[in-house]
Image 1 (cartoon, rainbow, N blue to C red):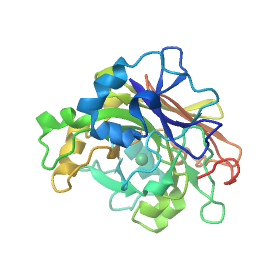
Image 2: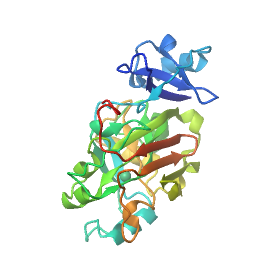
Image 3: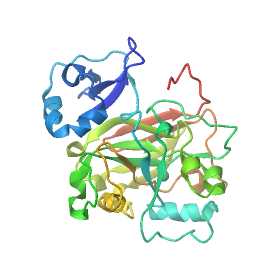
Image 4: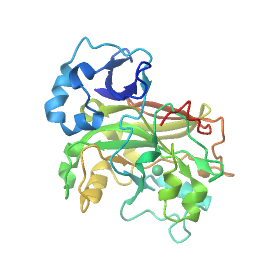
Amino acid sequence: MKLVTFTDPDAPGRDKLGRINSEGHVEDLTPVAGDRTLLDVIDAWPQLGPALAAATALPVAAGARLRAPIPQPPRNLFAVGKNYHDHIEEFARSGYDAPDRAEKIPAVPIVFSKVPTAVTGPYDDIDPHPAVTTELDYEAELAVIIGRGGRGIPREQAMAHVWGYTIINDVTARDLQRDHQQWLLGKSLDTFAPMGPWAVTADEVGEPRNLIVSSAVNGEARQHAPLADLIFDIPELITTISAGITLHSGDIIATGTPAGVGIGFTPPRFLQPGDLVECSITGLGTLRNAVRQHDPARNPR
Ligand code: MG
């Protein structure tokens, strides 16, 4: 099932839960789900999931505007750095990594976080923050959405804790990432986590190793890699994070990005105002975000 959070033109301030039907249209799930958010639904999935899947004859939401599936995560997004071999090489070549760490394949996952207010919708603008950064970059990533929480989750049980998947563009200000050494600032500016367009249940995705992660800027292909190329796979990431941090239902883990980001080019090809960034994953849809300075009228927050 593909679930979405949307607003309709009649009540733009109110988030609703929806489902993408076989024609690609948004169906309004509020007749079944009431006021529940996607987070509520994920938390009660064993009870609510079957009812949502069985619901038929739902109204199609005309003029629906998709928001991020989880527009306001209750805590930081977990994210993983340097999790594809080719990306480690391009990051090292770029000179943006600390010299003593460059080109080394990490022995254990590099886990950092992005603040929840970075999240923005699948078709909303990415704010270039010209007063803060001049080195804006993109990173297409598969994001895992946790279903059943837990601590000390063993590797062999990890996939049973995955509720589903979505796409995140881990937008990065490379100068802030480099200069501040700790990555939180460079990864967390407002609008630096476009998410969506849908949250897809794990049963519909099947084996995630077969997924292809790709991106394009202004229609020019930039990234393209199978998820099988991950250095630390999804069970390893869940086991590592949950070893000492209790994972909650609805937690999000962005799994890392393959080669082809802007700093991978010589000279680097940073995003500029007016650019259109597209991040796609097989069966999960496409994020489509223009780089445009924030306008509260266009992208109400
Ligand atoms: Mg990343």
